[in-house]
Image 1 (cartoon, helix red, strand yellow):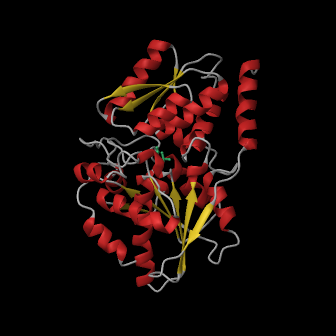
Image 2 (tube, helix red, strand yellow):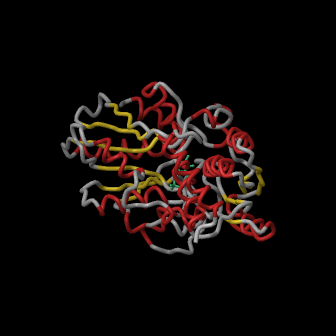
Length: 346
Ligand SMILES: Cc1ncc(COP(=O)(O)O)c(C=O)c1O
């Protein structure tokens, strides 16, 4: 039996979905790669500003249908920011209290957005502490710990239901090279890469899924050696992606290849993208695009024509005080010049 409040809450989320439009697939070409079409799936245009809008919707529905979320249940989440912004949006829609447990270095704009949606922020010193703290807080408040790092891969309906993979393949249908040679994605929870990889297999596509990984992340080592106990001492400097432990929602078996991307290359790429797109993007998009360019180099060397799809995960306005401030970049990331020089040749 479904409680009346749960019925109403699910209906609210479905109505919100009904009111929303799909995100655009931006196409562009580069003079250095005349035979390759690049595509960026622009996830920044969701109402809560990032690809995490999809995940937050799925996690709330999963929690409601599992009987974990009821009228008045406080929602607690461990997040590097973007998921918390999107979950705060849905918590407000359902009239539920929301607390985000985040590293204290989280971008100021994300904190403002969580507060804007009526959420509260609870800060910890290091990103590895967010899980324990969120769990403890949920216990203390008799709340529900959303736990995106466990449930991201299973809360999303990977077979379809307009998930991100289905949307990409549908939007590619009338393109010159409709089946992408590569889809490139970075991993935070690994939920998006899991959906993409499963959908590729389910539909029998020949597209290869390539996951890019920043510095201070264990995902790439885990992909190659499958040691689930790996940890990293330092936090990732690319907000939203790269984790200090092997997250349960990271599904290595659906990934064809992983590429490690130096943080300075990610940031140089987001500056390089600005005049191409006419707008600013977040750092994980720089990591994604750097990976896409490495694959384009490979395709060119092999004389192949085709298409590469990657994600524009969030917009740059969230990062004006960090990635878009030269002093901050100099202090935290280092010298971008060698990477910018490579990009200029494109
Ligand atoms: C800005 C940004 N990019 C990429 C990702 C990675 O997505 P996923 O968690 O599906 O691996 C995240 C996740 O938090 C993010 O916030």
